[in-house]
Image 1 (cartoon, rainbow, N blue to C red):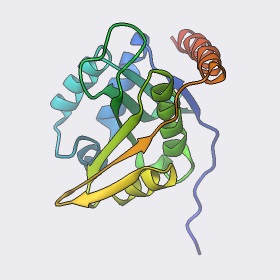
Image 2: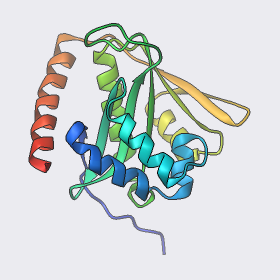
Image 3: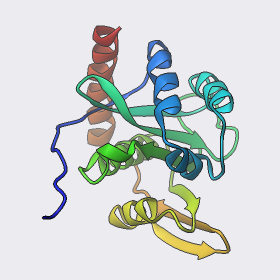
Image 4: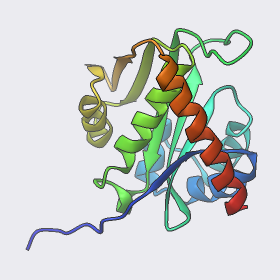
Length: 189
């Protein structure tokens, strides 16, 4: 009998400082393989917790995929170099994310990636880079689905998604979405 996966409707939203405890719990829940794939190497609980605490205040943005009110997928958008002052992240940025194993293959990762790409586009990013370990097939499949050009060299796969310039409509849509995100974050607190 084929394996059936539960279906769910995740809520994808930007993460805010009050989401810190959910981010910490998320990183601690990741199984060793998922955590190693996300960080491209093994990471202890102590190191994962330390990362979670600093990630909330690092340059860039974080997005979460919530299922039944619990953070089950997390994506980060980080500038490739020190961004200029203001709203812009620069011409290049990196996307990094992971989804808890039981919540994969239901569109959560793809929804996170698309949200990250939209935010990157609206902040002046032209090339959104993704990196993963060469044997991380789920991430490679996801990168291919959203149109990233991946190349495997040695033990890593590296690629980029080339983004169009923002438009007044894309900027407006993100402004509305972020207002809703902020409201949802306040409600969750």
